[in-house]
Image (tube, helix red, strand yellow):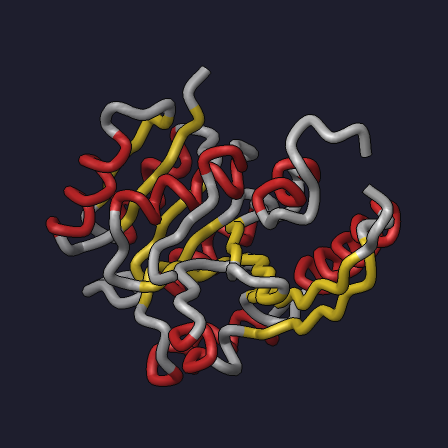
Length: 133
Length: 98
């Protein structure tokens, strides 16, 4: 059965990147354009991985992650953000509260999306990722 | 193959959480049980040092890299596929007898 992936991001271009990267893959992807819709979808299925934008209007990524972690400590949640201190301060609050999450650097390519999914869902054969070097 | 090498490894994690600590422990155990050679492991918290992650072209956490011997190899992994990680980093050959 296909592993289920949920992408919550207000930028259509980012959602499109995930869709295009995964549409012909072994992963089934659902897309949500804001935190509220994302949480609704999250409540409807058991997802294997969630990709979550940090900065969104309305309910931001930190708030969505807190809601997810109220009931679920195990599903890997990837915060999609630029690797920079400016974006990490609010994430450090979550670390202090012992909330687990992972990071993926923005912008993210289709190959990187697949490499992350293969790595965390156990298909390491495809995961010798040479992006960048 | 009997000649043991020395490996320089880095593990890039997101935060110093219990799961991060468990992963470091799991990695030490894996390397010890495989008897692949000696190694040194540096743990980098990307939340604390994002510049290092950028410099090292890290795309996501958790990533394990082998810096030496060259060439640099990287695997995004939570270590659930132990064999795949060792092969991906070139620490073990595919279909070797271990």
